[in-house]
Picture 1: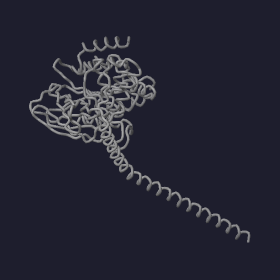
Picture 2 (picture 1 turned 90 degrees about the vertical axis):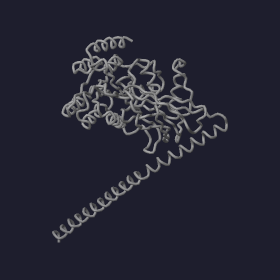
Picture 3 (picture 1 turned 120 degrees about the vertical axis):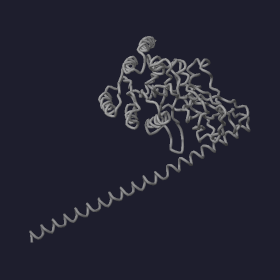
Length: 414
């Protein structure tokens, strides 16, 4: 009886374990199915929600403007032109239609309060979706419509015989409320046969000292400080000018700037480049706000890849130099570009950002990957180091290196 009882007890225990395991398996399976169902439902729901939110936001803006027009308090509209780029085959024209918030010019903003007010007006824009804009370039004319955030982007075939350099394209608002809105000129950078290579540069902590990896410093830099207060990295103006000049006196190499900063800061960044005599080029920024894809900013800095791919795809006849910093994901993104465009990237320059020593090992591995893909990456502590390397490679003239060093000393002494 004892043996029989022991076996019976063991059998009962085994059955209990089996039942317990079976119950747990059923519960776990139910949880997985519930989680899968929830994720699928969210994947179906969120795009619909965002599209609905965009329509509601657009209707609200339209009703709000109509009400303010009836009350006589609606400001006039304006077209804000952005710099485009292209080749003799195709070019992109960019602009945005907004309510004119009457931001004071830089010379009239002397105080912290004045800077804060100007920054607020630039951030809190009132976009005009569905606006019709006419584009005239020489003897050609096109029409376009702004998207839900007021952006206009048109890819067009330029007029015959367009040469390299900057060209002004006329933009005219057709509707709504076109009366009294001035025509504006949108600059378009054409890259011709005289260019030896192109340059694509990050902005934050590559051109401008921002402390972008520190949220408080970034908030201060982007919202409160004026372009005349913010400083470029020493020697950047001379180095970028040297890259633009290239190895010959007749070269006119195009330079592009890409950043995670919002389009609302376009004028601010443009003023900064002009003030510090840094070579002008198209600014490729991102939209911060509600769209049919979601709410930005989000998803890291992947939008930079899209912008860079578009430039390389359009200027397919040119090799490029890429410039970034170690504080964000520039090196990783540039490695991706080197792999996707074999033989197109001459070099990747990465500025070492203080406080990111742990990145040294990661950057070394990325440099090996880039070298294996047929290009090269150089991590530098200052602009002169990059200029000397570029001169050794024959991309700039050695006399320009002396200019870079002189400018670096002057800028560092400020």
